[in-house]
Amino acid sequence: MDEMPSMTGVRDVPSASGRSFPAWETVRKFGVAFEYPTLAGPILLTRTGASWMVRYVGKAHGRWRSPDAAAKAAAQHHTGLPEWDEEHQPVSEDIIDWRPLGESI
Image 1 (cartoon, one colour):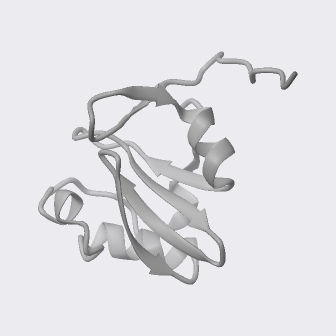
Image 2 (cartoon, rainbow, N blue to C red):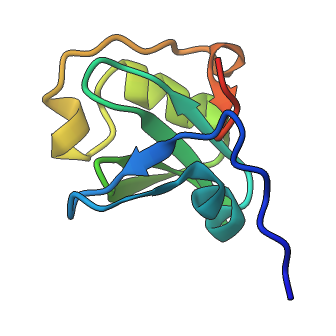
């Protein structure tokens, strides 16, 4: 039986359906992931195969070759994901300012 990861310092990630799920589930499902907290909720960058996607409020869009390119698109609100692109929340273009998903501040 797989052991559940420690939930210490891990918060829930909201989905479009309103259901929240632990951040570690996203990491386990998508592998490497980054997040940037905003007042409107966290925006995520997840790896899918050889590309990176932007995830926000349970929806995903885009295929960037690197997390740097995905972070830049998110910062410029040019992700193709209307839920994020219409938000006017600032995020950093530099992936170094994003944190691995599930790590507490």
